[in-house]
Structure formats: C-alpha cells, structure tokens
Image 1 (cartoon, rainbow, N blue to C red):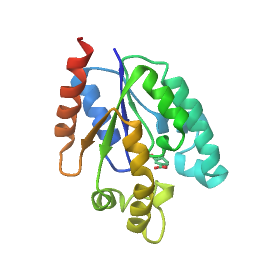
Image 2: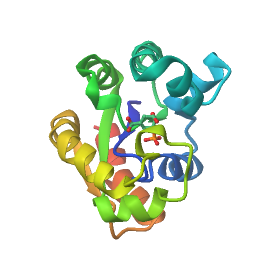
Image 3: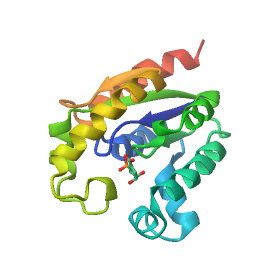
Image 4: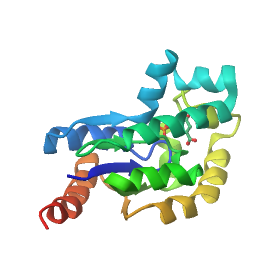
Length: 172
Ligand code: S3P
C-alpha cells in the first residue's frame, strides 16, 4: 500500500488529520518534524534558534528521504517541505500527496497563540503568514496529487475526503 503524505502550511491540520487517519485506517503514522526533533534531541524551535533554518532544511531532507522508503504509512510533514524539490520527488516514490489547503486568516486564528513556530513568531504574524503562503501556494499545488480545502471543514470531514480518494485507488 502507498503512503498517505500530508503537506500544507503550519496550522493546516496535518498533525491532527494524521492522528485521526491513523485511528480510522489503523495505519502507522509518523511526523517528520517529530523525527527531526527526536534525532536532534531538541525541539524544532531550538534548532532554528541555535543553528538556523538552512541547518534544519538539510536535516529535513535527510529525514524525508528515509521516511519515503516506508510503505503503508501516514506521513505528516513540516510546512516548508515543498521548498526543496527533492523532498517531493522522494515522497512521491511510495506515496500519494494530499495538500491541506487553508486560508491565511484561518491559519492565523489557529496558530496565533503558539510560540513554538519560529517562522511566525514575529511582530505581525498575519502579515508573515500571508507573505509565506503567497510564496508557497504554487509549490504546494505543483507538488500535490490531491488538494483538500480544509478552511471550513472539521478534522473528521478532511479525513472522509482523503479516505474516499485514497482507499478505492489502493484496490485497483
Ligand atoms: C515550518 C513549519 C513547521 C516546522 C518548521 C518550519 C515551515 O512545521 O517544520 O517550524 O517552514 O512552514 P508545521 O507545519 O508542522 O508547523
């Protein structure tokens, strides 16, 4: 069975959707940021602070390459995974990619009180989100196999959509 790979901006619900898919499909689930943090023995925010974004991105490439070897997993990724085309190339080898598309205002409301996301831990987070999203939307759309618009959907409804797309294709 292929992997279900979730991509999308911070706060698009990747982690929550992955957990719910794991429960409903009884498949194992892994989050690339958690693997990076555990291999580095420090949270992502601390990696950014101490070694900078490019160090994190190199580590992310390594981790994504190794997670992409798996089969039948739910793989949830960090919001910047699309910045390096080799990540997408690797993830597509054994996986179907789902882009959880979410409006900037919805993202802002979900993550405004979260200080663990270094890229939006700035004076005007909404402006930052809008800028990053404008820059990345094309990358998400080009990378993905399917787009699921999550702005007005509950976690369960997002999972319904993913399952309805993914499962029938696995039986062919
Ligand atoms: C990032 C998103 C974060 C994490 C890091 C960088 C990004 O993951 O990988 O802070 O560039 O958008 P989440 O999308 O899980 O918050």
